[in-house]
Length: 127
Image 1 (tube, rainbow, N blue to C red):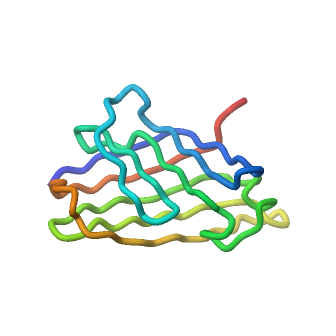
Image 2 (image 1 turned 90 degrees about the vertical axis):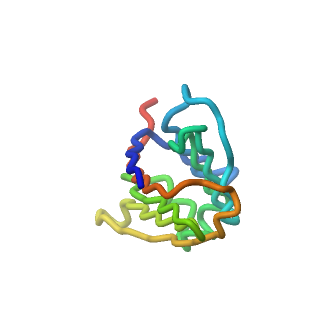
């Protein structure tokens, strides 16, 4: 089992209600994992290229206004023989306090991916 780390930056589009996380755009695209409204692009060597959270406010159970104040996103992708588990924690500022919401999901490993653990950390993109 290998362990990969992924760091990058993210943007939130309030109009489309989508969080974009860009990690390794230079890597060659391999496959997209579909966790419903969370899409993860992996490179051919199983590193995360990009994460998209579609309908983010609904998925995370917070307002679009709150998502405009995201501090960081931390998560993990655990690829096993039979299933792939995703855990995301989104920290944002609400009423001058740090607040964290979580999202967890899993899918069957129908992609033939080898066992791997990938950790994700992202801060806001600088304009």
